[in-house]
Length: 201
Image (cartoon, rainbow, N blue to C red; front, side, top):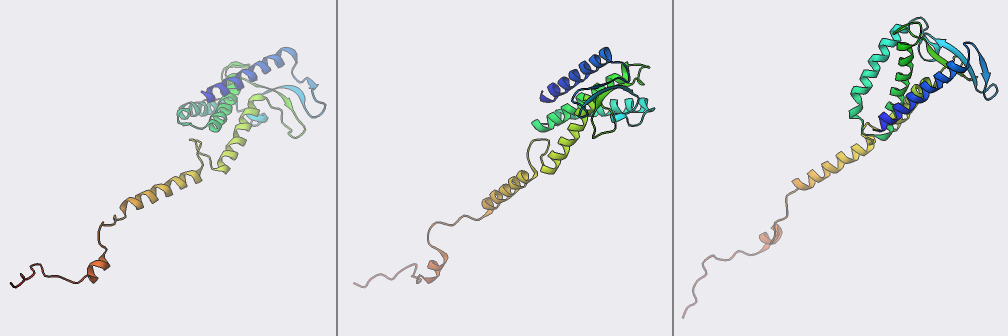
């Protein structure tokens, strides 16, 4: 559920932003939002994220459909909230750019992606879908470094559970102490006749 909500929010925000950019800016127009720190620069990208691989749009369309199918197929296995957010960001970003490639000019499968965000740290122009995809990759690194699995548990927690199970099994296999006299007491006790003699009258 969380995965679907995050993906839907990312997709809607990305598509609404692109519609507003296309409606209010002309291609190549530059608008300063926060001075030089953030600018709107409307371009149409025929490549992948951050304008990489221009001229191979149909390849990225096929790859996008494949990755999208994998995410949808793998989603039911995710039990962790953090991993659900990660895959939601990835799914929403993929859907946002894939929609452009499938339905925007110049044609189906080779459409140009609308990019409009520019910051000094990056030479390329990008969009909100790209931001979501990169954010999912950053979250992936964090979760992997911390050792958090798809079920939300850390690898160290699983190791502790295994040790506890081994300890319980060891306790169950230990022989129980026999009630009564201990072995040492039995050996030190003098032996008596099983049939004592009858006293003489």
